[in-house]
Image: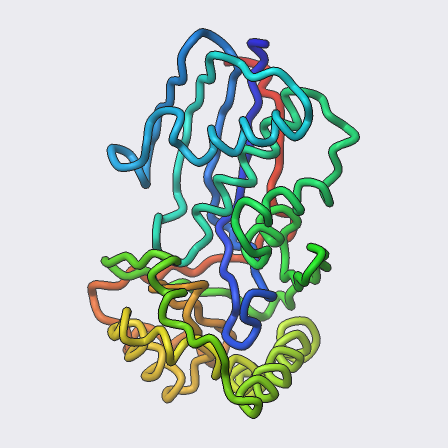
Length: 298
């Protein structure tokens, strides 16, 4: 009790076009959370995204996840939790802010209790249970390009250095729940087959042969983006314009942010298609995922 832990968690982009609920990418944009089990009340300071908006008490996702993890570990619940959040990941934009909060809560609980027998695989299973699917929590935990499947299980791969993710963040939001409500219960067999082929091709394009032409073909989707377009017409329109210009662009997660894969021959094609109401943010792939440390000084 009273010990302080600092957890750093990356933004993530899920689906990557054809890899619905299975592919994810960790991005070099991080939230930092300092957690201390002390006192008699829950105190939360938030700097950045979510300040003045999210629950500053027991209803905060990191707090509820931390408590759920303590229950799973069989540890007693503290009365007081002091937390400081520096949030750089935008909320409700399709960049994995909720997954980052869930991973932060799980890793903080593990570190503060010294539960070394609670493995990364256990953390992935719990995070998936809380989030509902592993496509964001897997890259947040492990970094890099991840492929996740029922289990949950995952593998993490490195992305070629020639490829640089660029996120285009709009000035409007969309909840994941709203976006998922637009998905049909079934899809045509030909569309499922097409996505399976494109997802397999995307792994090759990101890890072995990063040509713009291959990336453009590999990021084609038929399972979710068109169905969600009515909820984010500006996103759908910009994705179409970017792809028509030769830029491998997809909806990031459930949207409305767009993820584009920039190479030397495509990076100059992005800005002319984007209006002033979108933030263009080039990023790197985070190769290692979430990290935990105990600050030496407060």
